[in-house]
Image (cartoon, rainbow over all chains, first blue to last red; front, side):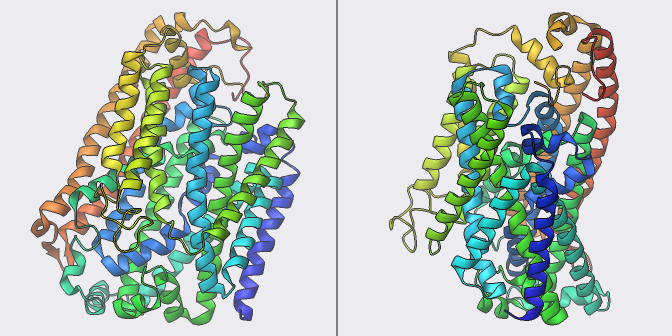
Length: 512
Length: 108
């Protein structure tokens, strides 16, 4: 590792640890630990949401996808933006009004029962862990390539940093690490985009001509069909992307960190601006890579295209810029995994430990200890898993989490908030059927069953890589049919619940 | 503490019914229309390649312009919602002031 890399790397580690130290003194109650005491402003929270959401996979992967596949890579990035409209209109404000710390709180506000807490906690836990492990594995491989550390060291560094942030600094440290990451990521992609334009003397037509020359697709580069040739696959992917975000627990619990509905809306709006602008810039960077580096050289460096942005940085600004971009990729990774650790921690220590095992009878101090120990345990176990999964391709788990979120969490959240005849049994059936459908279709699908390189070497029984188009309707139907077959007895209460959801009339944050 | 809130009474009030109607009309029509608009994109990309790849000017294809149009539409819709939501908030404030718990704290 040369000196420039080392310098950037150490700067970032020290900077985030200072944040954690500062946050640790403000994380003395569960309210502070889980929700940063609701004291973030809408704009800060929006930046943290963007920091939670834009993973290294999308920073590096989408630039690569656009450089290699042109149009289809661009399509992919649009789905992420659209998803925020669903979040804004349907779920953000009611979740803020109903819950205290976790997603389980929201559903239990209408159906107070241990069964509901169990399934919501398990759902949140599975989604967060499935999302985190591939991130850790991918980042281990990535840091190895960029910083020339071996895989084990990279995973250990990232794993221990994320654990330290969450254990000592809770939501406050996590949020501020994410905010710092968003600022760094946005400014560096903006800078790189400007350099790409100036490289071609601000002549966009010249850039596009060079793009055509740089890729084997030529004119075809600007046309669809290179990445996803099957239309069902395409539609399935989009549906999972736009609906999935509204069911991702690590995004949704961020709505507890602001103080009122107006700030919630401001958060989503800020996040969608940042994410939207970010993907416009990835388009520029993707095209820039195709023009400056060219398809052949990119595919030789790394067949997945993940090295597109680093290669571009190196070609345009030499080692210094490459070191800078690598450091940003590193920050991106730690910010995202820290967000996932805190969401898994909340599900475990607040829902399972506090509400179920201890029946809500723990002191403030015990809860805080429990949260810190869970964060430690979750960090440790995921790091160990990531170390063991080095040679196994687990990236598909990320798209799986969107499908699980859209098919099991989202129907429950939407029906709980908006449907009068929804019942507790309906919630359980919906959750379980969505989860079972997405997992089993995945196992039967080509990610696992593949003649060439699957875990099970045979023809897939189910042909789509993205089973969302089947699994999401199954989750919704399960919830509907379950409610109609087993109607709840608590119909009158819906009015009460509904008023709470829409007005936030009953929230007394921090003192119950 | 909020035990004094009479939810059934609030549900019956003209103010709450008004809020509910207006909010539902907005949040359930706009996204449906938008979803259709959104899904035309992959469908056109899959089945109408000549249209999507027809050149509008320079090297810019219809598909890219269509894609960029989403940014405008999404941000416009988000702003419209935020604008509307401010009115909903005002109605909510009125309802809470009129029927809510008397010892309500500021900022909750």
